[in-house]
Each structure stands twice: as structure tokens, then as C-alpha cells.
Length: 112
Image (tube, rainbow, N blue to C red; front, side):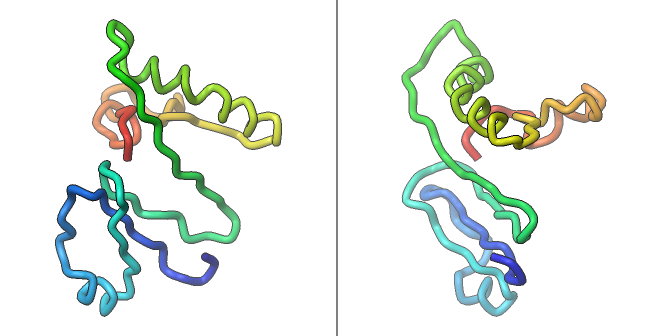
């Protein structure tokens, strides 16, 4: 995607704020996913890569969404670390004050 503007994807049940034609005139590539979830703005860089994936699981009470997510993603994190990729899953960086981090989007362990 180097040199191009990043694509924007919205979930199946979301309505974009603007029609696709308007987004195209603004230079924004947009597409609706066949699945639900929130909108995603993809990284437009030749120096960075991204991976988008989803997990579908039953309600696993009494575990929290974060605990279930962390457990299910362990294989991916371990594999990426073995490749030398530095990770900060779910915005777990200590560089964010706790109260600020709780308000940020990436702190919530939900799909998109």
C-alpha cells in the first residue's frame, strides 16, 4: 500500500457517514466488510505491516473478554515474537497513564 492513502473498512451493520462516491472524491478508499465489528483505518506504510483477524467464541463466563482474547491470541503473539516482532498487545504499554489508557479505543478488547 505504499504511497496510497489507507483503506477504510466499516462493519456490515455500520452505515458510513458518507456514500462511497463521496469518500472516493475525498481520496478515501472504503469498503464494507461482510462481517460486523467497528470501522478500521488501515496503516498506509511500507515500513509497517498489519494483520487483521477475528475470533468467534461462545460466552466463556466467568472470564472477561480481555482474558479470553489474551488466551486465544497467545499462539499469534508467540509466533510473531519468535520472528523478532516487538508487540504491545491491546495497548498494554506502560507509557500511558492508567486513566488515559482506559479511555482510549485500543484499550477495549473487542473486535475492531
